[in-house]
Image 1 (spheres, rainbow, N blue to C red):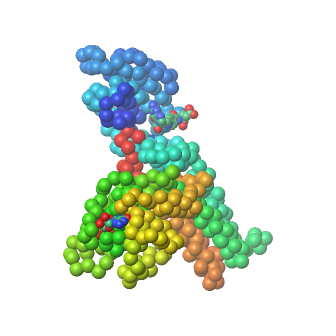
Image 2 (spheres, helix red, strand yellow):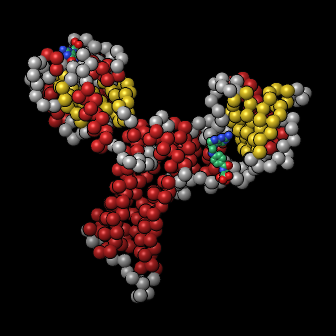
Image 3 (cartoon, rainbow, N blue to C red):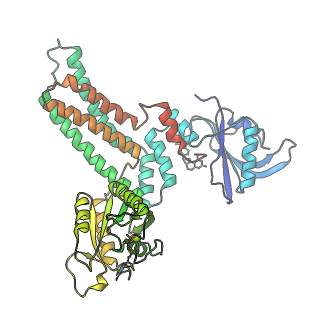
Length: 442
Ligand SMILES: Nc1nc2c(c(=O)[nH]1)N(C=O)[C@@H](CNc1ccc(C(=O)N[C@@H](CCC(=O)O)C(=O)O)cc1)CN2
Ligand SMILES: Nc1nc2c(ncn2[C@@H]2O[C@H](COP(=O)(O)OP(=O)(O)OP(=O)(O)O)[C@@H](O)[C@H]2O)c(=O)[nH]1
Ligand SMILES: [Mg+2]
């Protein structure tokens, strides 16, 4: 399918014990043969060979182990040769340069995996899982990745595609052969409940996917409140680090200050913000604007109130503004009071924040953790959401009395969106963009 032979360094470009230069394509074996002192032209697949990389004067360049993988049972489905050389940055690059000068082309990021996809060894969801494995930073993420590599996303989604195909087939029978009276006509009364059941299944998958994504990427958490309530003090207490500037001057924070914490298996991506109030200061206004934008995107809002003072109109406004969001309301400056009412009370300044940490942990456990999180790619989730929209559209139309043959177009669209998860329906430029985000040499 591809007439070029590609090569890249597949290990990190940093000094290490061993590096791998990977070569894939029709000429992989002959190219490496021209710089290797042992005969590998007849080497069996899945064998490793000791020898020297030699230059044009037959002088040794490095002592190496060369692995041979013969098509089609390889990572790319093409012949692959891997040179295991000493792991210096200079020597690894030198060997890659030699391979390139003998006719291989520099691989683009993700191009080995892209070839595996085009040759049908893996589908697009599996290719994405390979990259997810490289990027995984916790157990949940690496478990999701290995499931994905093994094809579990297809197992999950394919039955839903089948459902749609069956519906489409039944509608088409009705359209194409109306004279066949023994072929049952699919009526709206039958199709509507089928659509509802299908939508329930999709919602379950989406819920699971959302939990997968949150577990993998962390929860975008914003600290908001009036100036001087102690948001920056709280960020510092949460991070156990003096990251944000704290002063008793209202309007200290203008830019967003970010940091990450882990509570148990949960990751929170924290953002400290400019205090919200009616300001005339131009710089502060920009900060407030940024706060408002981040507030919309945030997955968790921590509303910080000064517990030592009665709530005022500005606090109330913020409470109203965030009531639709997943939020925790926190009363700070507990140390200024003798007694206090119900709620999450903390003293950010004194790093007494256990009640908040507990609440965050509990929120994560009840809302996010799913025993089997799966499917964390935004691309895949987006496609599932589009398929859902298509079917919601079909459902609404049928509820208004539209006949099945006229909603077929929506069902077909839902079908195509789900197929796109696996790259079975795809646009070339989108595929190129997707793989270009991969690691070099993968
Ligand atoms: N040295 C090395 N280590 C590596 C990789 C690699 O490419 N090279 N991998 C790169 O990601 C991962 C392993 N993934 C791989 C996936 C498929 C095949 C492969 O040859 N598949 C064939 C044969 C399978 C079999 O024998 O059953 C096939 O699917 O037909 C190889 C590696 C991690 N470790
Ligand atoms: N007594 C007491 N003072 C606190 C506490 N937390 C913060 N402060 C004080 O409150 C003042 C404001 O704290 P910051 O953390 O800068 O408040 P902020 O909400 O980030 O303020 P802006 O950035 O202006 O919006 C500082 O003088 C802090 O030392 C607390 O728990 N108890
Ligand atoms: Mg601040």
